[in-house]
Structures are given as C-alpha cells and as structure tokens.
Image 1 (cartoon, rainbow, N blue to C red):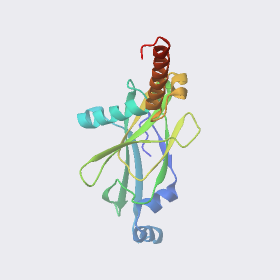
Image 2 (cartoon, rainbow, N blue to C red; image 1 turned 120 degrees about the vertical axis):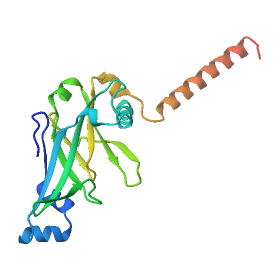
Image 3 (cartoon, rainbow, N blue to C red; image 1 turned 45 degrees about the horizontal axis):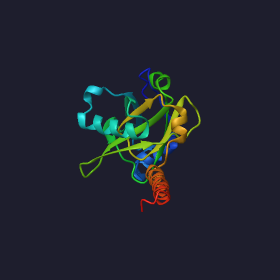
Image 4 (cartoon, rainbow, N blue to C red; image 1 turned 30 degrees about the vertical axis):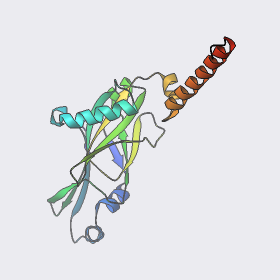
Length: 200
C-alpha cells in the first residue's frame, strides 16, 4: 500500500492474488518460474486531473447519497501487475472476482461530516463511465471497507446532515404516496363541506 500520509488501506493478500492473476501466472509465481509482484496503490487524487464531466457526475451522485452540499475527497485505487520486473499493465477489472479493501477515513473527511459515502467511477469497455456508491461493510468509525471488482478513481462524499432528517427521510416512492393521501383527504373534506352547505 502506498501511504500518502493522508489515507492508507489494506486488503486480503491471498484473495487479491487469486483475483488479479490468471491460473498460470499464479503457478509461475509460486514455483518461481516468474517473479510476479502485485501492488495495490491508494493515493489522494489531484482534482486538476479530473474532468469537469466526471466531477459533475460525482457531485450528482453525492447529492443523492449524502447531501447537495456534500464535500468531495478524491482518491485513486490502482492495481498494478509486474512480471519479471516488467510492468504488465494496470488491472482495472477483476471479472467475476471481488476484493474487500479497507481504507482509513482521512481526518478531513471524518471531521467534516457525520454521513460518509464512497463513490466509485469506472470507464467501461463501451466508452461510458459508470458512477455508483459502495457501501461501508464494517462497523469501525475510523475505516471504510468496501467490496469491488473494479478499480479506478473513487471519492469520499461527506457532509453534516441532520440525524433526524436522515432517520425519517422517506424511501423511494413514499413522497408520492404521502402527497396522494393528503390530496385524497383534502378532497374528501371539501366534498363533505360542500354537501353540508348544499353547494352540490
């Protein structure tokens, strides 16, 4: 892991090797036929190197997952495969395999919000970019553990959000139902009043 003094991470080594290497690469590395090195690098991302379109997409997702006023902390999670001192390539997809990565939550993020979500971006083979939220799978307030089969630019979205609003926030579809019930009740009251006054 690459420590930038701001964010660190850890991963299960065996699971990472099984996910990143082909069967032959694994055999060659174990038998000593090849010198195989797998490196997971976690670094702070320079915002000037992020396109406006990608920033807009991340901000939109942050608004949905955290708050419209969410702050963003960008990071790169990169996996590199080196064979016999020759860098083969950056590994961006693990196919059907997944790895669990545990990140320390940077102080700026931890101190800046009571709601924190990790957003993952990924450039797909068809030329599109997907943006989604990776859930935190651990109970430690100092770390964020996520499962992924794709490695790329990610971002912590964080904000101080009213805990009561978070707890009582309606789920998808509830807003429409609440408005519908309110309208129905108001209509019933209006009809009852109209009948009483003999307007209809």
